[in-house]
Length: 129
Length: 191
Image (cartoon, rainbow over all chains, first blue to last red; front, side, top):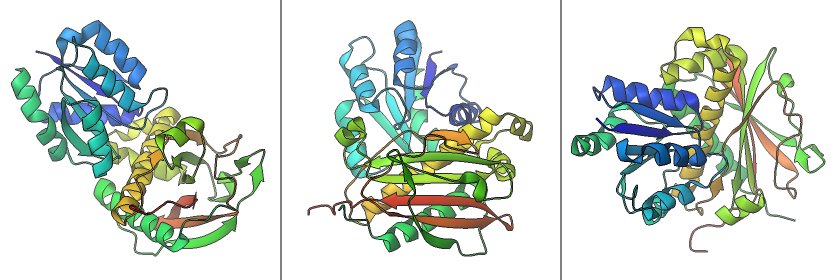
């Protein structure tokens, strides 16, 4: 079973997301990254095993649009679905993220309920098998 | 001189977002209206001084984010707005619940600082989203900065502003949350 990569600069937020994934019954292993640079490292080492990337927006060290755009441009990882989990909830920001990565498959605005996150990732994980 | 953002809109938006977020994440409502003051910005070496230990009787966690008119301005660090979130230490422990963390983690200062930072990120982001909903341009935001009891270097701000808003919130029957904010002009969409 493929892994879920959770990218957020807040470790408590990453743990909360992972807790929701577990409680929703998904058995996928999870990986964590604190910013886009760490996420690139995690993807590079595990790209064949990643089912989805859940990604915050406002993080240090790297513009998140550069990260999601970079994912879209590297053939080996371009097909990995990306779900944004962020406070950036305006139509403009959603459009920017979609333009940066056409494989953006979900958008969850903080604060979110467990149900909102589950609904965003369930179809992706079902397709990943 | 830079035109300041409408303080009434800013204060009303912050009040609404703080109340809504605490209701959604902690299922708590304040029975007391927030107290609002306009204060002079004290600047030193290009940064806004903040005085966390004057907010409460005891230790305090602080987190701040900055707003920028565009992503390019963010990259150049040309600040348009500042949102500083102060939380009394014993209340920071209560915020653990919002992230499903066990109370024993309250002993870990790094965890509490992380939680206060994430709350600040959520509050500031939703203030920004609300302003966009009111017709203002969508601005960019920094990642949260976090500390305890002091911010030695001060906080970046729009150097041409002279005043900031201070909003004090009462939850759990005590004044325990303070937001300081200042904002330069944000253009309205289509103007």
